[in-house]
Length: 144
Ligand SMILES: [Zn+2]
Ligand SMILES: [Zn+2]
Image (tube, rainbow, N blue to C red; front, side):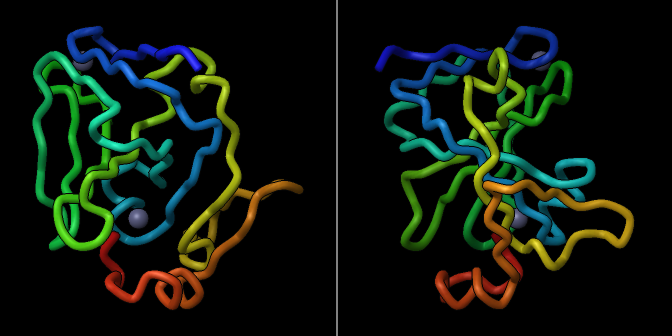
């Protein structure tokens, strides 16, 4: 598969990924809901397959991870694990890529934590509750 290149709103940050996954996940945990402006969506990639250039700023949002944005325009760029078993993986914002890189939403985690007024659903979208997600990821506890 060929590399996919994306960029933030202003174009200052560019992201190049080898073999971009075709699956998008969304998260309604408290951190993602606040940071993403309503929810956060991501395409997972091994960090060593991703090249980022430009003014990326990061914020350590939990013990496990940090979040990165363009320091010029504020676009959400990535969520990156920096501790524990998922270190070495990150999630890239689908909107960086034309047509979301051709990927499609396959999973919503913390699905039962959505605000009362909105949620995501679809025939092929798995809904994973907080309880089930944390059962499969025991190193998490409301901090993804
Ligand atoms: Zn930008
Ligand atoms: Zn989350």
